[in-house]
Image 1 (tube, helix red, strand yellow):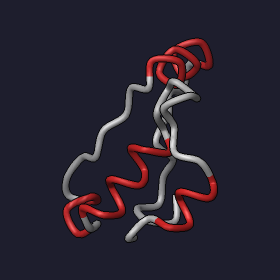
Image 2 (tube, rainbow, N blue to C red):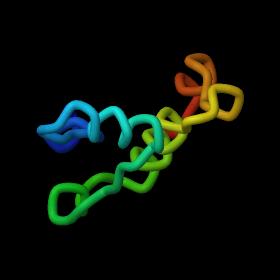
Image 3 (cartoon, rainbow, N blue to C red):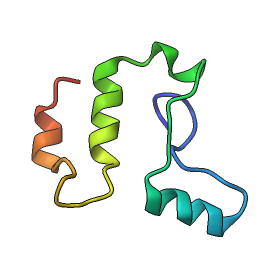
Length: 66
């Protein structure tokens, strides 16, 4: 929300919203994301990884280049 003003998952229908979250279905649409650095997008991708075993840890996130 802080980078572009809206959350990564959104839908008026709560069921569809939960489906998006479970599937990890998000993107970086233009024009809002055009000025966000690749490093920031990389960190977001790593934080929103579905599989907890593959998701970045808090400690790793603090060491991320962004």
